Image (tube, helix red, strand yellow):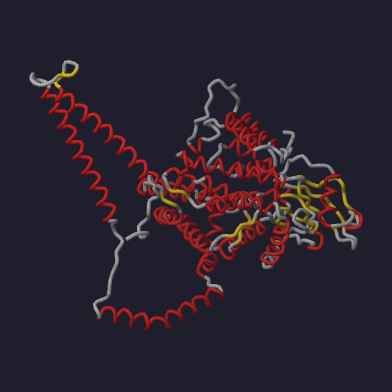
Length: 565
């Protein structure tokens, strides 16, 4: 399929951006696209029928035409097998590499403006033809004036402005979906978009990628079969990144015959062990380790490329992931469900029993796969089950699942005989060590806390004992708001009483209709008509009072336990 990527103008109005998304939803929001989310609200029977492959290719083309933000979104969706059918994930996978480059004049203008000099003075040689074009930038081969061979990554013009406006649009739509749909409340699209926004902002800052290259270069030093190209800080800015040239072949270009001539098994083992250590030991995650970002060099080493999408894994999440992976490899479905319940946010329709049963069934099937067990696919499926059962998984869960899923794909491509399950078991001691390890800073913080506790304990204990001896020791328990409960009961009692009075007046008016004496109005006894009119007015007044007061109560923010008492 020929690529036609072109970023939309940054001057587009918000209305036009919403219109583009609306057209995309109208054309592609069918049940086959959103079957994982169980959504088919956009179904249109009068649309021309297309095959799954044709519709998937059309969806990829439309995302590509909408610009770099949606291309990156397509790259993210290409690994979300929990949301999209296989035809769509395969069609979106091509967005990772096949993008139309922009002109060399724009490249020259950006490089000279960012680095503050003429291109010929900054580099000894600069190839005007790009080596590769991505959704946010493109790469050119160059040579420094000292003869060092490098590659120069140049960001697309207006990429930041377009991405900022697109992310604002997606964020507002995600917030609306979360408020108004069950699917949004289950999956938490607003948090997912916020996570995507943070990752995209990191990719648009090439200085951050340069720091990631330096950091990962040090972290992979213990692994002799892995390498990370190092940046040239003097020729790197937020929009231009100059780094070492690494010669080799992409893992995606290696066929079965090529792999037979290579001893790729040790490379796959080191790659898997390294990423586990980085994620669970160092707390950093390369969120996009797909085969297209891995380069096998001529000397048999594996180069890690495109480190723009690197996120931090909080320590609390590291511990949970360790427990989750260990429970999966042990086949303990109940423990997996318990860990997920601790990680996620329970919605009102959360069904713990049904969730535990489905998780146990999934883990049982995964363990039954034996050496073919893929932790990434299991984590993705667990995220889908969490959303279906009213348990919103944390936003980081999707990135971890995506990274492990891509890692499984990369290691299996390198070594078809590689077993992710066995690799997890072989590295279980390292995983436990990373989960239980305490940094020197953590030890110092614990020592300071212990010192303050020991210093303040006698004074606090004496104060408690003095208050207890003087009879001034009070215990406050915020269990129930008695004042609000009393107000509600009083309002209910008043309404019932007024209703009974109105009903009595209506009954009395009906009985007085039979009285023949006294004045009459419109042929009706005046006393009966007066009581009937009063009853109607009182009923209308009661209705207005109920509607008004209930509306104010509904609009009033609810206080949580402990905020009053």
